[in-house]
Image (tube, rainbow, N blue to C red):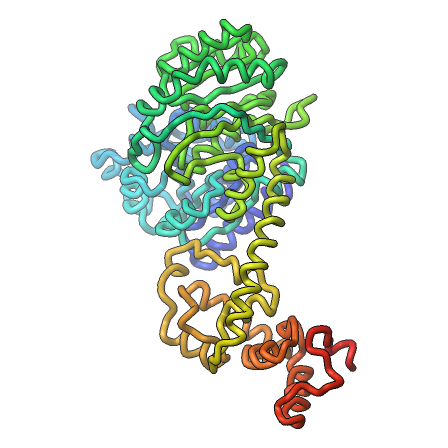
Length: 529
């Protein structure tokens, strides 16, 4: 199988990280972009190098999917480490293993610590659980690849406790733009569901409480779905099996052809097949279909299981992002969840890296009154936030320029050189979030930066890298920027060092006053040469 360009880039990036000595690395690929294909090819590469490879997952469907994809993509067969099945004594070099099985002490003790040279963890946002960590610590010298679809920066910070790097990330907007996933249109419906009394357990809303809070609104939601879901193939996610079955019956009473599946459904395979073939137009489930199930023709997702976990939200929506003939977009129905907490996931959570932009986009969607393409909505919200931020920062900068400080505030430096990466920087891995070292602080002060404002090691590192690069390129120093911007000159961060030096010399020769012939507000060095 010939890999898509981004899949080949991911493959090379992972192997480059391992070659650099980073044994634990992570790859982020949105649902529907072929992460199983990518790690199958990586597994094949490692087998060619002589490794035994363990593909680790937490659900039987994921193991079966991995084994099937491995065979179809690479031709490699694999052994199974699950329940009564064992890979010990098998001549296959690849094993798909259930973490529930592998984590059992008696099972784990049968393996030498160097038995597997490479371990691939599917749905790696689960990796910090005790069961995964026990297995990975046993094979402590193995190369580890984690693959996940989560777009959440919060998850990334947590995953940074285990992984040494993010080898590759392919974003949902990029996948849509490149034509590998379908566009998403979000519609916020005026159904206000009160969640203020629902308790939180293990970092998310408790399913039982959600079910009770949701039931009074099911008739109203079904009426809304009559208007917006007619003629669509729809999947509905609900918090409880009981709620899912109740909603199926309500939908059928409203004229839909609805079915329901859950973990105990004996006819689950038949129902899923019938839904795929069009016998049903709505499929209700209680979180069963978030992983390991694909039906590309799904073109409407209804999330009636509100969550604070972005990886879970992305998995639900991901059931409808695959391409299919005649399908030009996915309709995502959102609701006005009333809650005192502000961490609830919305369509903006799929695409916005900044929480500030996500809040603005969510507010915009609530006012829209119709389906809105989420990429367009994100761009509009981003522009609005940038405008608000620029106004606030302009006020801060005006105050900073009036402060008599020997050193330059990092914010003034970042704004002057127009560096959005620095001003919007958020640490992802553990070392980045640690305090800046004394060596870093001393180096920043030597460059003329007020080091107390460099809040973490990652930010200090980025500042030092940028300062050194500017020095090599002959651009202005922080002290030149501070002095000239105090005189009213603009965007001094984009000037050459020599241009700034000449202007400072002219000001000095004029008794430390800007020459009458120079207008600081409009002056540009390139125009003055």
